[in-house]
Image (cartoon, rainbow, N blue to C red; front, top):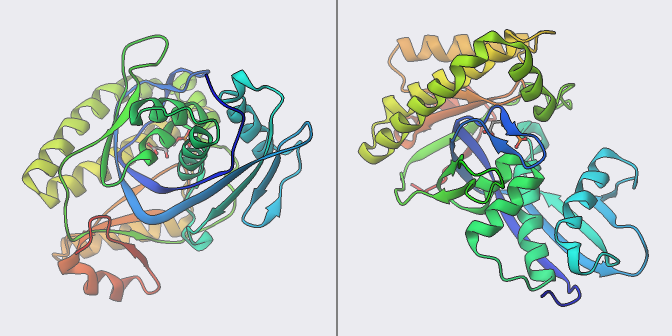
Length: 318
Ligand code: PMV
């Protein structure tokens, strides 16, 4: 059993899905309808520290600002810590998270934040959970957080069990030196419909969603092939079509869910034009207006010339 809490601090990377997690088969346990595959963003992510404190409520700090205890974020963090607090329900924590993801990149930080918090709580209560168990726990905080436990390419196996113990992420063995992810900033405002609500609405109201699980399964195996053969055109085209298919199911929901802004569409059209001219450049997008570019190191100069100020990450180095 666990010993009373100690201080602990951990970093976890943000991740970008090439085959998206979209739709839950269990909303309590965050069990997905489909498997997904991502690449972690190396040094971009969250550093989270937990310290046991006296008192009855947790104190939650995000990027230097204390969050009101009744705020959605603080409640979500406390409810997540409750999962670890089973042996010491009375122990409160001060939780401090710093995201080094440039806010201008418009990247969600819940995946890296819950992954870093999971590792910190594991140390705080000396639970000595395995990587797989840590991934299961992180999944309960935010689905995509189960993938942020690992570097490089990561696959989240959907699992079949009702208790979710076989729904966790695993790192793939392959690496891809020279692979680049570019972050385009369209808008950093908080999205009006978060991914939890967006998934639910899509699953409940979009007939188009019925075809999503099959598409995701097919895309997942094509991505595995692309990674094994280091076939960039296959990787990029599957990732882009997967993201647009997910957005198609969102648009087909009611009320409609359109995360794109005019600048998002302008960026897509620019990418398609550059690609038609011979540049090997693809994109993916999550539940927001910002695009994430996919290209290889050989094209980096050409891409940066087209998108000034682009934040570029090389998950596997050069
Ligand atoms: O982990 P959540 O609940 O924030 O969902 C993430 C959903 C997407 O970002 C749209 C897709 C993904 O696989 O990351």
